[in-house]
Image (cartoon, rainbow, N blue to C red; front, side, top):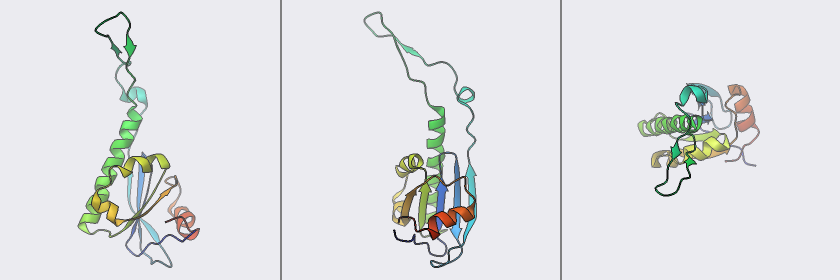
Length: 153
């Protein structure tokens, strides 16, 4: 496995559907030194606090049977909105020159969701993606697991 490449000023974005850490490499490629630049969190209350009523029922035009409508997954919707906002923040950062390159580290589910929201600018700046859920770890442990162990590019 090749060692992950991170130049000085590159960002490492570690996220899931509720929390994102934007880390900046203040070191160099040989000796990375990650520092927290931003922490974004989204409160995600219980489904009963987010939802309103029970799922609805549909009445067909003909016949006497009824069918129920699937209840909205409010947690899923909140995670999608959070990841859309994060993708917009990354687009703004790359467009304004805050960073030239970034690497995404996210749970496989969050990675699949945020990919659809990458702008062309973010896609060009993206050095790699790592499908790991590391957002709850301290920064030194993230650095150790990814940069020192040689995570995939």
